Length: 389
Ligand code: FAD
Ligand code: DHB
Image 1 (cartoon, rainbow, N blue to C red):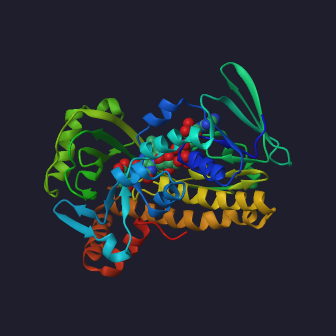
Image 2: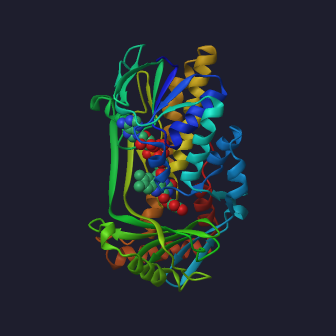
Image 3: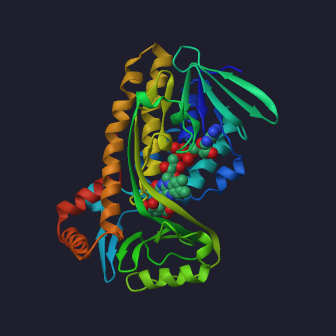
């Protein structure tokens, strides 16, 4: 097989990139290790910036997003007894949209056949070859048959654990990393949300987030020690914990229901500097991870893809190499600012085991400052809606 761009990974990065190439007449193939159902079963992000909804609109794939997405014009930071509303619409003129990553992925997958986007699911042992030269290719096995995919470029959109980043020699890159001493335990359930807008709460019992997927489907998270396993948490125990953290501050109180999904995700900040090695480009979680506080992960993947698509399409349409050379610097400028915001909000809203009374007073003072300062609220709001491209 032969194509212009071999895309590894059918998460949001790989699928968006594939559709942008197809729309511009650039041939590409997406190679994904898992099945379609497995990818659609992963419950992840839920808040989209206009960068992400804008890409869906540009592709003409936003009909369901427009019909079902919830426009959010504000969100809340909270303590045990206080809600601080950040009016993002008034402060920035923008909004965010609640629409699950799973739904974005489904819309992109459903549109693939009609747009001629080829996705090869269940491709095993994907290996990258020759990106240092001008004739790279992938090898992989599918249904017991060995395949070779020749291409001009490889796009590594294969998430944090994929092979693309590992194909770049350590001597050609630099890693920046911070791990956090807790994870997020999440639950998804068909119950109405406890509040009309999202709440990020720093409570005496630890961080908690009240989010949603619709007016009838709630998504909650709580901070748990890294040693906790999902099996340690019965649904009842988790609902009790959520009620303890949210009932005092939310309008409707926590409604309990059967869990559609429960999982624990560790929190990490990570940036891999370089995003290009010869003819291999990295995008999304393959190159960077943010802690989920602030909902930047998926949206950063979308901005990387925007820059990368622009650069490669310009190259194929006119031989312009400037975009390819400039991709990394453009993407990293936005990535580091999102890393800063996610790190800052994580520090402000979580209880760190090593922190004492002084650090807690610092959090309280900062939240009090946010509550009374339009300048502070504006800084938070403009990062939350997403910095300009
Ligand atoms: P991914 O979505 O990881 O997609 C990569 C794809 O590559 C996957 O489909 C994978 O199967 C495939 N792949 C991997 N290895 C191979 C291989 N060898 N061969 C072929 N294909 C391969 N962000 C938020 O904003 N809010 C959240 O609440 C949130 N929760 C998260 C929870 C978890 C458990 C995780 C892991 C991430 C979460 N994120 C969240 C981050 C957000 O989901 C990611 O930033 C986003 O998925 C990045 O998209 P991506 O396409 O770059 O990577
Ligand atoms: C969700 C996840 C986040 O990390 C966040 O900051 C907001 C919402 C969610 O899954 O709904």
